[in-house]
Amino acid sequence: MTIMSIYQVVKNDATGHFWKALKVDGRFLLLDLALVIVFIVLVLTNSKIVIFHVAFLLLTFGAFFWEFHAFVLRTIFWLTTITSVLFVSIFSGEIPFEEIFEIPALTSVLVLVYIIAGQRSRAVNALQERTDELSMLLEVSNQTTLAQKLEPLLGLILDHLKAVVDYENATIFRLDDEILTTLIDRGSTRQDGDIPLSVSIRNTRIGRKLLVDQEPVIIADMWGEAPLARDLREVFGNQFKAASSESSSWMGIPLTVNDRVTGVLALEHSAPLGHYAPNHADLVLGFANQAAVAIEAARHYEQAQTLAALEERQRLARDLHDAVSQTLFSACLTAEVLPRLWERNPPEAHRCLDEIYHLNRSALAEMRTLLMELRPEALTEMELGELLGQLTESLGNRVRLPLVLKAEKVGQLPPDVQIALYRISQEALNNIIKHAAASRAEVSLRTLSFKDRKTPGKGLELRIVDNGRGFNTEAVPPASMGLGIMRERAEAIGADFRVESEIGRGTEVVIFWIGAS
Image 1 (cartoon, rainbow, N blue to C red):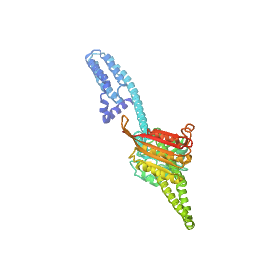
Image 2: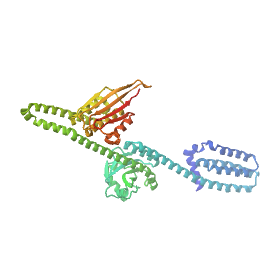
Image 3: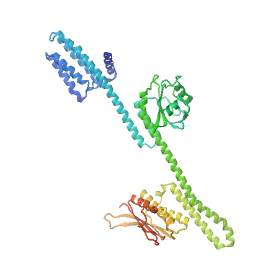
Image 4: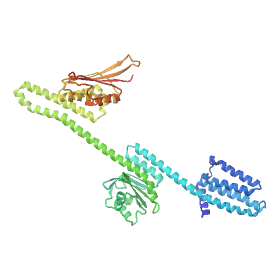
C-alpha cells in the first residue's frame, strides 16, 4: 500500500505538481547542497556505509523541512542514486556483501518517515484551509459591518463561500412567519426568476428540521423518494424542478441570530449523489451566521426607517393641527360672519378682513416652514436672512406677536453653520412665545469685520431680543428652556453663545461666529 501511495504521488506530480515540487526553496538550499556533497563523498570514499547513513539522516531531516511532494521526489531520486552506488561497491568487492542488508532496514525507516511526513502534510493543509476560511469570514464580517445594501453583501458572502464549499446554485431566503422569501439566487444552471419569490414551509419535515430543530438538512438525492426529498420538491413546485433539473445534492442551513431563525441558505450541486456531507455543513455555518447578521441588520434598518417615517408623520400632523389647521379654522369662522358684519358694522368688517388677510399669510408661512422641514436641504439652499424672514413671519402671525427682523445679506455660509444658526433662532423664538409673555421681539443678523486681529476675517452676529418677563440666569440651570441645546449647537460650529436676562427687563440671546479669513 505504501509503494502504491508513493507511485500515486509521483504520477500526480508528473501530471500537475512535478515542477512545483522540484522548485527550490532558498531557505532549504543548504540541505539539498549537503546531499550533493554526501553523494560526491560517497563515490570517492571507502567508508560508504557511514556516508550512506548520513544520506538517509539528511533525507529524514528533509521530511520535516520540504513540502510533501518535494520530499517524495527527492527521496526517490537520492534513494535510487545512492543505492545504485552502494550496489556497485558491493558487487565490485569494495565493501562486504553483508552490508547489503543495511538498505532494507534504512528504507523501512524512510518509509515510516514518509508516513509521518504525509500526516504532517495533511495537518498543514487542513490548518491552511482553516486559516483561509477564517480569513474569508473576517473579510465578510468587515463587509457586513460596513455595507449598507443587503443584496451586494449577500452576493459577497456567496462568492467567498464558493471558495470553501463548492456549489452550482445557491439561494439565500429570508424567513417571515414560516414563509421563505428569496433575497438572492445565484448559480450556473439557473436564470433570474427560476426560483419562486416566496414559498411556505409550514407543516413540512424540512420546515420542522430547519426552524424547530435548527439543524442543517442534507439531501443526497433531490429526485429520490426519501421523505425530505419529496418535501423539497413539493415546497418549491414545478418551477423549481425545471430550474434544478441538473442538480443532484441539496443542503439547507438555517440562518440563526440569538437562537431565532431568520432565513435559510440553500446549496445545490450536480456532482454524483451524496456530494454534501456534515463536514460541509460545519464549513458553511460560519458564512450562514454572517448572512443571518446581515439580514437581521437590514430588518432592523427597515423597522427604524418605518418608525422614523411614522414619527415624522405624527409630528407633521401635530404641527398641521396646532398651526395651519387652527389658523385656517379661525379664518373660516371670520369669513363666515363677515357678510352679516359688513351690513351692521362696516368698520368692524374692515378689521375682520384684515384679520383674514393675516390669518392666511400666517397659514402660508406655516406651510412653507413645514415644507422646509420635509426637505432639510432647503435649509442650505436659501440665504440665512430669507430663512429667518419665513420663520419670524410664521411664528409672529400665529401668536400675533410683533417679530421684527433686521437681517443683512451674509452670502453663502457653510451648511452646518447655517443650519445651526437657524435652529438656534427657532429655539429662541419658541422660548419667547412659550415663556416670555413678551409684547415685542426682534431678530437681528449682521456681518462683522475684524481688522484689528492678527489674521483679519469676517464673522456674524445673531441677536434675539424680547421685552418679556425675563429670568434670573444664575437661578436657572443651563439646560433649562432649551438653553443647553442652543449652547451645544453654537459650540459645534465654534461660535460664542451668550444669554443675558433680568427679571422684568426681557432676555437677549447673542451668538458670535467667526468665519474663515
